[in-house]
Image 1 (cartoon, rainbow, N blue to C red):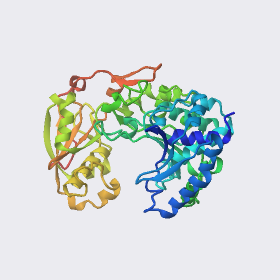
Image 2: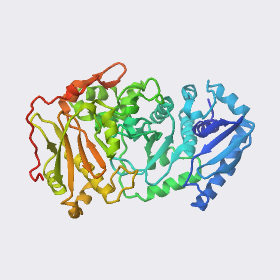
Image 3: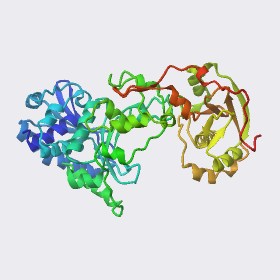
Image 4: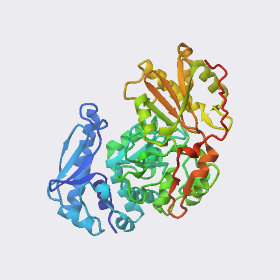
Length: 476
């Protein structure tokens, strides 16, 4: 047995620990939630948790004392003498160096824990990395979420934590892996995808069955839950059954960072269609291997896997940089002008925008997103660095009459490749819908679960018929 209190403290240490200048630090990334100036009452509660709850546990279990300080972004506790902590964790073949969550391997520790000890470990981990931001909601039904947020690329740690939840028969709502396919599905040039891993669980069930150690976090989570008290809670099933019951995938484009050396070797050089796809590559015992394999080998793969950007918004120079660095560098275009009202009317009556007779389609929803981006840029609704539109498309179109006569240039390619919308010095690239063609280009290894497009050239997207027709009825 590990012991309940030690299991809790190991969660604390692994969640926030690091060695700095021969001193053990544990960082609690409380930022705004625990900020003395912005939230003094909550900061007072955290102080009580550290002094009255956490400090005696370290003294009893490891015979060590800590001090703490508060910075602008976090609370930090310090240990000058931490030999007993190192010795205890080494008994589970856990070596502590650098930032622990970046490199620690906890499988031996997990295998030594019983169910109650695992619950205490999760409580300690959640006291450090569990976010109780009220904005965390379940994507599918708007339920309050607690998000365990763990930066870095230690995918095995995330897998092991998720398996602990499974051992406790507690379903995870979602794992948002720290991978470009999870954080930058539309834009292959989006560089700020490194946003960390997020294990998301339903807040009400977490408080009822597992809970935090810190009263300050429990009270915040309960307050969030009360804001949605009338909502009916339906628990998802455990993996892999949850994926058989409900499996939804959103189209994602190949990202330039799929080959990033930041990613674990096992994960690198592959495209991922779903969070469960990464679980398969990691060989998680609860991974939805049958579901992922079935989806990839179905006709649907051409709908959810895109070689080109789905939407790429930005200055025209940035879009041109993408083109010049890709197989599109030799593409030729015909430029035609369209009124805003023309594209709006099409969007309200059609699903796709067609530019040729051999069935090359462009999602009008994506075209409208690009169009609204260009309008919001021109009228200074977006700043220079912003590329995501503000507001929801239906509401924006209802209030768009003042833009009806605005002229948008669309560059139509000679091949089955993206179109480019241009207004002033900004551009919106919209990828084609090529379900059957993309399917014929994919390569899938059913052993490693790696998925890629084969090597492609512009010729692979050649239009067989030279005759092309323009769909818009109100063409300028």
